[in-house]
Amino acid sequence: MTELTLTTFAWVPEAPRGHVRDLRVRWALEEAELPYRIATVPRREEGGAYLDRQPFGQVPWLTDGEVSVFESGAILLHLGAYSEALLPSEPPRRAEVTSWLFAALNSVEPAALACALVRFSGDTGGSPGRERIEAYLEGRLGHMERVLAERDWLAGAFSVADIAMADVMRVVERFAGGLDAYPGCRDYIHRATARPAFVKAHGDQMAHFAAADRDREPGSPTVPAT
Amino acid sequence: MTELTLTTFAWVPEAPRGHVRDLRVRWALEEAELPYRIATVPRREEGGAYLDRQPFGQVPWLTDGEVSVFESGAILLHLGAYSEALLPSEPPRRAEVTSWLFAALNSVEPAALACALVRFSGDTGGSPGRERIEAYLEGRLGHMERVLAERDWLAGAFSVADIAMADVMRVVERFAGGLDAYPGCRDYIHRATARPAFVKAHGDQMAHFAAADRDREPGSPTVPAT
Image 1 (tube, chains in turn blue, purple):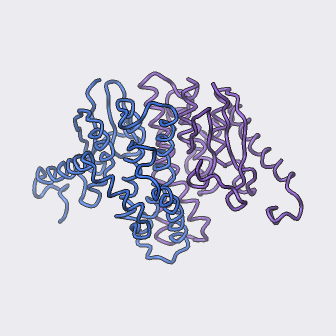
Image 2 (cartoon, one colour; image 1 turned 60 degrees about the vertical axis):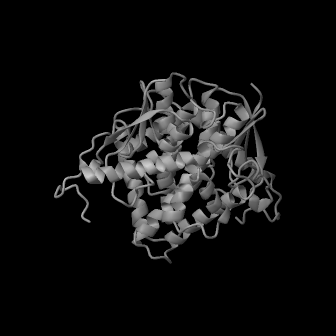
Image 3 (cartoon, chains in turn brown, blue; image 1 turned 90 degrees about the vertical axis):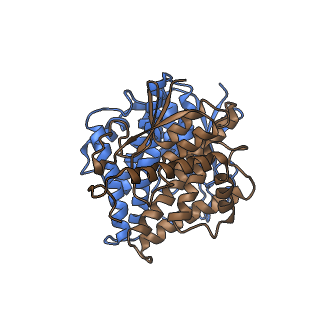
């Protein structure tokens, strides 16, 4: 195996820390016990020029020799090839994991993110648009609650599908109205985030941005205004 | 290869016809010239009981011997294993296709669908929520316009990534405000939908639901009210 390099932002403000999507990749790398190094770019607002690597101006991306992968879902699948702990090779189980990975990213995360955006827009509620988006998320969470009432992990054993789905649920819990009505989803987050690989990955991301705070010169225009 | 069976709804109303997601799978099957059969279920409103196969109450799913796959993205990847025309096996190109497949489904479709939901909610514009969602979609389309200005297909040659992305762009064109400001995206749809495999897949889906109209008994409670 060539050296795996995960690129993320050099610095972000407080709010998204713990939720920058390199977390999903760090988590997978820790679960699989794969060695890797972190590289950084400044955000585009601070002069970062990397649209040839990540065409939407986001992070992360992963390089593995001559292979470059962007989108957290694609990176999780790429790493899955290195570890049965991430992605089983037996076809029926592999298909189940892949199905649930896409479900996290195409059926649940879109509703979570839309709901978070509307809530943070200053829309204080009562608009038909906000109500429709909230109903969209509630529909998806209702199905997930039924599924998670009867299993610990989505596809038999822990896999990349759980990394994606648990991280999406964390977004709902923090930014999109919470999970008080969905105890099965809340318990699922607790199971997932108690894993040593998550604890390590999350701690590393928080430490990375905290170190970036300390490196910033006082008075620099890119220092946060706090 | 075992027999591939694609399951979709027996009948849907007029509005979503041509956009039911079995289209993506039919399109891939036609591109790869793979034989398949169609199976159907009634929608849940009409008594369909299939949450064990598609946990969000949607279609499609695909069975391939003992393997069952749901989520259109996962099905496209599964079929990719049968055809270089869908998913190249060379690692750098494969990673590029996979990255763009997830980009279609996790970076562009979420914005398109949220925008369509808010527009169809009766939110007539001006709410902060609607404005935020529209800005979200415009951001993603702006990046896609830059990418598509300089290439015909997302990852070197036509692939499953284009099936997903072009179908997402069709949703924007029809349900989420159109693409008048994004001529590169509009041209991309035209290139994609001119392919014989798309024409066949789209025609087959429309014919499938038209035949279902004719099979419905007049006076049945499930016949549309028109």
